Each structure stands twice: as structure tokens, then as C-alpha cells.
Length: 136
Image 1 (tube, rainbow, N blue to C red):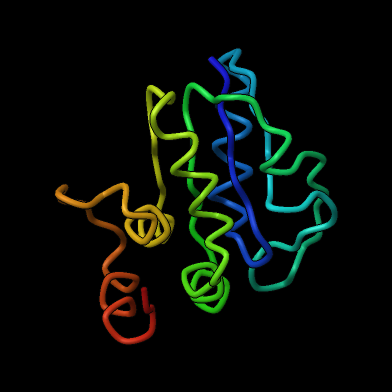
Image 2: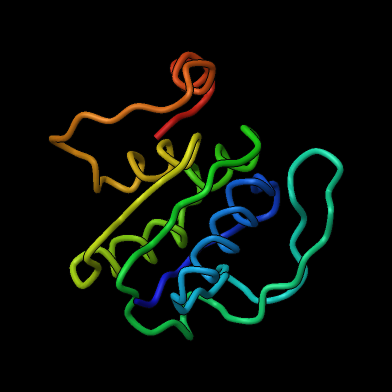
């Protein structure tokens, strides 16, 4: 199984590193990808990490794991007029067996339109914050 984790500056370390390690231990082929390759920073202390592959270079994944992150980073993605992150998700969705999110990643999942008509949830502070500060 090939799993893609689309990241961005301000992503939660635990939402990326934990699943990456567990999927890798399970023998899956896991790739961390971003709109543009290069150095990214995790939320809070900004621990840097490097992403080698862009969305444009990705093959079809069997599963896409959408991580949560900093509210400002999510708002920037949601309000991106080019919808780069969402184009990646909607391009992957028809061929993926699983489209998954963790924590605030549900906000990105929902904002992509892929949850339209479905019920979803996330951590309660994210849900109440989304009513105040996330726009679509």
C-alpha cells in the first residue's frame, strides 16, 4: 500500500511523524509531500524537516493521510485562491482506497469539498475554532 501525507508549514509533528513511523513499520510505502519541495517547519517550535516531493510529482496513492496543524496555516490553505492543497486532495480521491484525516486535518478535508454530504468530527477545540476563524 502506498500512502501520501500532504504537509505544509505549521503542520503538527505528531500528526505526521507518528503515522509515518507506524505505516512504515507496517511495511507500507509512505511519502511526505507538499505543494513545493523543500524545508518545512512543524507547528509551535518550528522543528524543521525536508520534503523531497511536490504534489505535481506524486503518483496515485492508495491512501492519503491529511494531518492537522496551526490555525493560521489551515486558514492560509483554506483561503488559497489557487486551492493547491485541495486540488491535490481532489485529484487523489477518486483513485484512493482511503482518504483519512487526523485532528484539525478534518478542516482541510471538509474544505476540499470531499466531506460534502458526510458527517465528520474532530477535536472539540478545533470544531469551535472553525466556527470563528476558518473561512471557506
